[in-house]
Image (cartoon, rainbow, N blue to C red):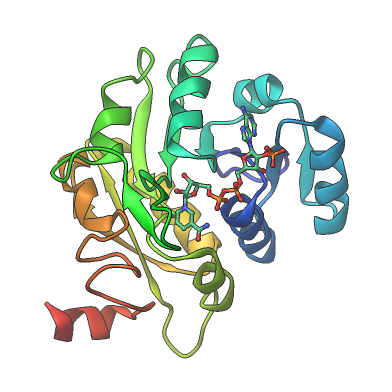
Length: 217
Ligand SMILES: NC(=O)c1ccc[n+]([C@@H]2O[C@H](COP(=O)([O-])OP(=O)(O)OC[C@H]3O[C@@H](n4cnc5c(N)ncnc54)[C@H](OP(=O)(O)O)[C@@H]3O)[C@@H](O)[C@H]2O)c1
């Protein structure tokens, strides 16, 4: 990689993974993409152009400093268990919302009302791994449409227990076309997960700018 920024891998190339990857490439960031199938990742990387390269999941984790696990909550738990050795010392980004279809066309929370996915994932971290909850605050549609909005960027909230990774997470969020706002430690995750006060599908209702946030709080 030719830049001096942290190397980032995006694992999972569905709604969120593809948008995060595209936004980062639009921000001139080199990325590694990986999914179940290497062929799918290669096809997508080719669509994104020269800043993106495809890799197997294990290779992507090994080569990257920051790994965005753009997969469902249960899959994050599986990947952390499977790649515990490779994830040691890495920065893990968790965008997950712990939800499943409710059978009535909506979604329901699949963990306790007072629990957050972030706190559960934090309890599973491999040795030395650092966790940031980020990139899950907006639906995939808004994450695509609100990136690089002008004149003022829309906010993406993040939470982490580790201040030493703030700069890397904030650079990542900025390079994806948003304004980073740290809301606190992982114990604040519930506020930026779905139905939370700062989630698009919670009280906040839409992408907002930093000045709109100040008015709202
Ligand atoms: N969609 C949203 O608007 C939204 C908003 C905020 C947060 N989120 C969160 O973001 C995460 C991803 O959601 P999504 O909507 O992007 O889901 P999605 O469209 O279903 O994408 C998930 C991706 O993960 C891949 N995958 C599954 N198991 C894998 C494994 N073991 N290794 C590598 N890749 C694997 C899937 O590949 P295959 O298709 O080949 O199985 C698929 O490409 C979830 O935790 C969700 O809660 C989603």
